[in-house]
Amino acid sequence: MNKFTILIIGLVMVLMAGCSSNNIEIKLTTPKSFTPGQLTPIQVKILDPKGQPVKGAKVSAKLDMQGMSHGDTSLNFQETGNGVYVGKANLEMEGDYTAAIQIDYDGEKSLSEKRFSIVYNQAQ
Image 1: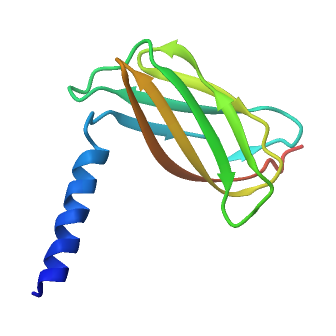
Image 2 (image 1 turned 90 degrees about the horizontal axis):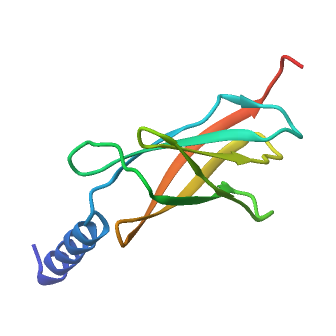
């Protein structure tokens, strides 16, 4: 391998290590469908590096529809217990979304991106 390739691999490894410094695990749960004009619950479960539920975090997210430029949807989450936080989003379109989830916990901020797909509720 040439020196440039080794340098690039080294930089990628350093960046990966820096991005996972606190090792918080985030699990995103969304419904498979939504009803236009109604708020849709979005849930995250947060676990600490020991696998224990995180309590007392400040959680927010921005939802961005992939491939669209109509802005993003911001939401704040409320803690419901056992490491679970719930927010409600006003989704306008079905499709593929990216949730940029920000967590402020124990003096550290974490940012994680999760993807999900959602369709219109056909049982109206």
